[in-house]
Length: 245
Image (cartoon, rainbow, N blue to C red; front, side):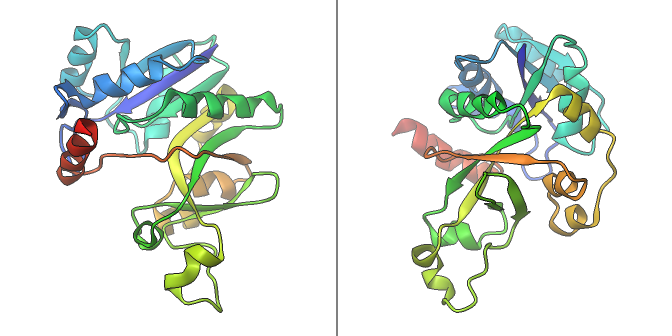
């Protein structure tokens, strides 16, 4: 069984109450839920939250939801707790609750990575086309080997092109943005929840570096569909314009 879990916290530092923010007349979490439900390969969708307001709202639109602890250090830990309620799950998808424009085809593409038995964790990347994104620490970059296995994730532009001016990097070399969509084999997900933070993770504030430092393989599949996450109220205003278009 393939389970999709949408972690949803109310107490976001940059955008409190974000899952209940309204976009085009409907809440963010309801839009994400609907998009994930449209995947042709996902068998079950559940929201994992630590807030009664979100819990009640998801139930109000007929969605499935579980209450989790409020002390999880990351969304992955919340997903692991929620997945434990579904013992028949073999692959678990972690879908960010602030991606109302996520395309169901991206989810299906991610799931197909597990047709290769050796894949433990999978994620997506999209080619960067704007210098602003390449230079922004809020846009996570990834490099991977010829087989698509992640070598490193960073908030800095990677690879660093020593002999090329920064303004020409995108013309001289392909750079990829990491999209915050993950899938795990369920046994690996349980393992991730027991790992302690690592030095690289602390340095870049990226939990996926913990996985690499512990020797796990992260398969990267390149998509031609970008992501549009909402981190701040300003992002929501931009999303309203996008939605109206």
